[in-house]
Amino acid sequence: MKLHWITKADQLPDTLIIPLAGGDALEGALQDLANTYELPADSLRHDVKAKKNEIHLLYGRGGKRLFLLGLGESPDFATAQLAFRTLSHQRREQLSPRIGLGLAGRGHAMDTAELLDAACNGLALGAYGIGFLKQEEPAAHPLDEEEAELCILTPKPATDDMKGRAFRGLTLAATQRRIFDLVNAPSNHKTPEDLAGWARKAGQAFGFTVRVIEGQELLDLGLHALLAVNRGSEFPAAFIIMEYQPDGLEEAAPRVGLVGKGVTFDTGGLSIKPSQNMHLMKSDMGGAAAVFGAMEATARLRLPVHLIGIVPATDNCVDARSVKPGDVIESYAGKTIEVINTDAEGRLILADGLAYMCKHFEPDVLVDLATLTGSAVRALGYHAAALFSANEPLGQSLLEAGRRTGERCWLLPLWDEYAEDMPSDVADLRNMGTRPVAGAIFAAKFLEAFTDDHPAWAHLDIAGVALKQGPFAKDRSATAFGVRLLTDWLHGLAGKNPFRQPA
Ligand code: BES
Ligand code: ZN
Ligand code: ZN
Image (cartoon, rainbow, N blue to C red; front, side, top):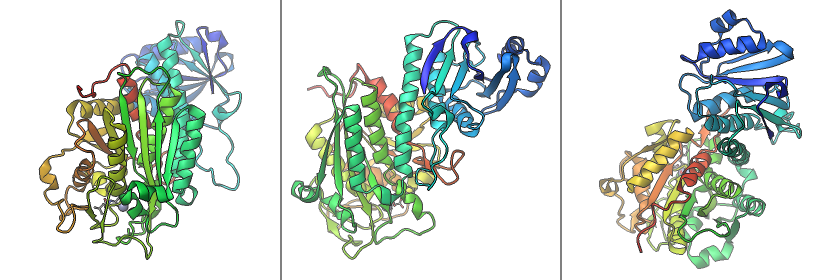
């Protein structure tokens, strides 16, 4: 979808979207529309409330087709993005490749640049089709066609800020859609090797380096916890290392380490899961997907940060060779782990990812993301990721990024009391607590043990938010949670380095 900026209404295409906020400004905005397009003002006033996701298709003067799009009262980025995505998805049959976006009035009640990001992002995300494995490819969305164009009407010439945000919205949507595909893909279409291939291709296309550790080298280096989880698998594990460092980056620029859980399918292993929702465990690489997406988006947007991404990848399967409950395994950090429950596998592979990151890259700030625990889902449901950080400014910066992007996070504690039952009788650590309480916090404490006391580490448990039920697919489907959150957060770090420790 190309962007085209105009200031004269006579250059608008026939199909137009006009975003409207509810509240005080609505009446005036409707009156203006009635005048401009010869619409019945009383009927507009009666029927158009501009509630969230409310859509009216009206026909106005000069053969114009007008979509009035409700944003609700005092809209923010997330509500606007969802409204545009809903329109794009629901009304694909009525849209055409050339559409106009009417921002000449002030009826949208938002910062124009922010609204442009939301509109571009939402329209492009709404064009996403999930049916990439169907025999017959579903018809392309009009906005995905070669000639697709969004004509943006602003009262004054668009500012650099507006153009930049619109570009960000589109760029991010392109990456988010690639991440949707990755998370929605069934496990037989995304072995660890496939994930490594995905990363290599993205690195080549957008400018970051990729190194994949496989086979004997994993053993030689001592990535034992990853290998332990991989024992039951028919597919070899992969340890994927990505690095983005733009030319001419200042030494003072932040060095950021991201680690993502890349479990391509989680059966639970011998501590096998019930079968009811097991098919959704194809999304147990949601943390890895967020890291992939953040790498790609950061490179595409040329953000001035040094970014390192690590994804330990394997599935967690049942086999005669699988790790058994009670087995003691080694880890990259040297600590031994008693595997009480083979279904607590994410923390094992992340332990190696985190330890490797700290040892080899010494990042100023370290964030890991993982679909780690059912406990996080029970605590926060499907509306927020569980965030853990002992570094208050870091936690706050991620909370704020969550608020800005709608990819919400909520802080949970990391008090040492939660780890009282972590020491094992036979090994250094147990991978599961002794009581069925506060499982997400125990898991976070377990990870903490592998961060080498990093002063700026945050953990995001995204088990509840990596997938979402409707309205864009029938079953739960990928959200690409973390991609926008991390990109926005990294954008905020540009030109600063609040997490560098004094030498
Ligand atoms: N991948 C699961 C966590 C999960 C649950 C993700 C629901 C998405 C939705 C993880 O590997 C797991 O099974 N965790 C166990 C840990 C327990 C055995 C200590 C859990 O949360 O039940
Ligand atoms: Zn598991
Ligand atoms: Zn898992």
